[in-house]
Image 1 (cartoon, rainbow, N blue to C red):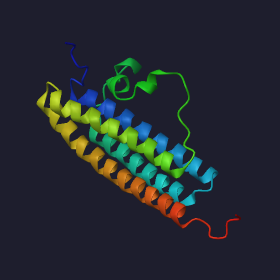
Image 2 (cartoon, rainbow, N blue to C red):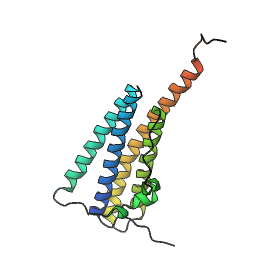
Image 3 (tube, rainbow, N blue to C red):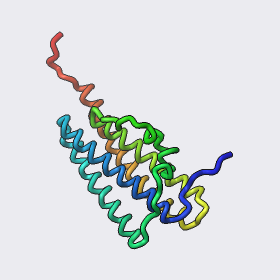
Image 4 (spheres, rainbow, N blue to C red):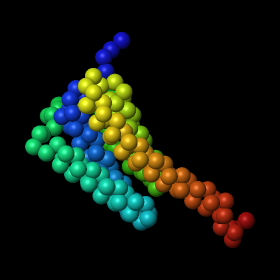
Length: 172
C-alpha cells in the first residue's frame, strides 16, 4: 500500500490552498466572461461575485501567511492535481461551458474536489496543526459547495419550468 503525498507542514498546506483558491478565482473569472459572451448576464454576475469572494480568500490566506512565505513547491508537488484533478496533467484546454448549468456544474465539481483534498489532509496528515488547519478549510469549501449546489438546483428548476411551460403558439 502506497503512502499518501499530503502536506507535511502548514507552509506546504498554505501553498496548496493558495494555488487551489487562485485556480478557483481564475475559473470563476473565465466563467463570468463566458456567460456574458453567451448573453447570460445573471449567471455572469454570480460568477463575478464568486470571483470577488475568491480574490478576498486569496488575500486572507496571503495575509495569514504574512512574512512566513508558503513553501515553494514544484508543479508535480501539488498532489491534489494528481489525485483530485487528473485533467490538470493533460495538456488539453480547459472545458468551456456552453450554458449556465454547465458552468455551475464545472465550478461545483472543482469545489468538491478541493473539499475532498482538504478532507483527506484533515483526516490523514501526520501533523496535528496541519490537520486542524485543513479541517477549517474543509468548512470553507463545504459552504461554497452548498452555495453552488443551491445555484445549480435553482438553474435546473428554471430549465424544467421553461421546458414545461414551453411556447403555446408553436406551429403544428
